[in-house]
Length: 397
Image 1 (cartoon, one colour):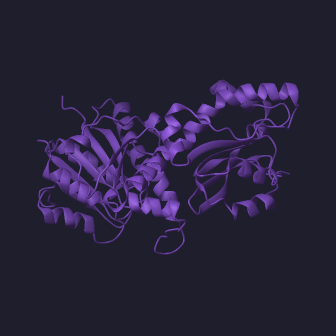
Image 2 (cartoon, rainbow, N blue to C red):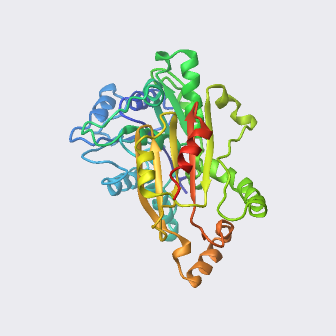
Image 3 (spheres, rainbow, N blue to C red):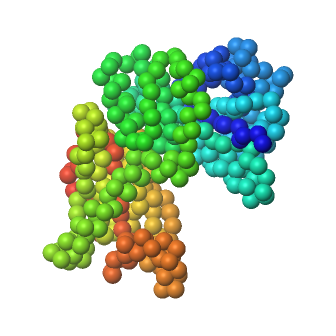
């Protein structure tokens, strides 16, 4: 029986060096017959043309597939799966490279491939493919400018800050290629690597220039595990590591201070954070069991601390006792949107059912507040943790 064909997904913002990397991999295929799927949001797939021009892959022999006029993370997801199935069944290739459009989010692409695998298993059919790894190519110079220079880089239509996308591409991956490091000093490169490590502690990081990376360092790495990659972002790991300490602290707070008084954000000075501390990169969690005053929170968001690179978490807003809100920030892009229903707003029966499905969720229950809380992870450079917490406390109702 033929083994599932491995797939590597390459993501990264426009101009990061993805196409250059694809051409280098095709020039040194390690004996593999590699097919390439290239996505471009425009009518003309420039990246596919650049790959074809190098002569390593061609549309005429089916080794190069161009998907245009949309993103494979949304409008072209079905087209992507169709092409993966076709290439896998053709039995002409040993490997599939997917070069995503520069504005693609990697998570939906991985979900599509995982769903294909699940569908085949459910139907009792042999698995056609396996996602080997998600590789994010990062323009190190742009990342330093975005998060250290304070300048927001915008999409052409001026509507959305690309910082959010840059962060999401880094947070959901197995390997980060820090490209264009030749444009930075050693100290600047080290700072960029520290930023990436804070955003994505679990990913491998490789520094390079001109996307000059050996194929053996990209192909057949067997790094991808959906659940691990999904939970590997820095903000998610910080929340997870905070949980045990939070429960212990809550117990003592209940004994000494009573309901409604919560601890300030915690900062963890573990050995693995020494490299981050050297460049002023730190993380902490702001956790309160009191709601925010809506107008005060809005005013605070509008003057978001410039030192914060990434902030994400749930927010409790006064008067919104049924609905939790998701606060999400990257660079200068900040949003506060309705997220889900608080379990406290459910019936006792629904609550018990939820606790049976997820027993650990009972640990978040407070006799008066229920599961309502604000829990925000902050990742930043040279942050004044005490000042940020104090300014947020002034927004509490």
